[in-house]
Image 1: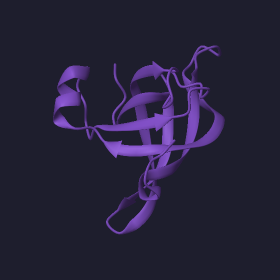
Image 2 (image 1 turned 90 degrees about the horizontal axis):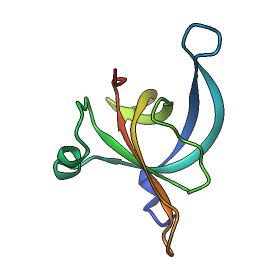
Image 3 (image 1 turned 180 degrees about the vertical axis):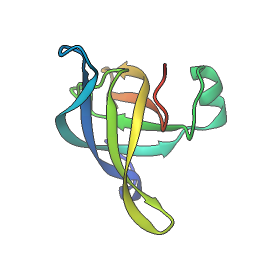
Length: 111
């Protein structure tokens, strides 16, 4: 993907496992993606209740699901901090010269 290097972040993808009878997250893989704030228009079009909304652009083969937790290192008060984000919506665009997945994120898990 062609994004400025300052918005590209390492992303740990955790899939939600419900098989054991209780919910837990298991690390599936680590990748990189473009991490950007979600603008107001996109937030309105997405719907839902976002707390600290962001979007993440990933390569099309990445397996990302609406129930996933993503751990992304971001700057908080001048320090790099691993922060949990939850996937609200995944838009898959595997076509054209700029194929990608656009993932809407929030710092709070959707019910």
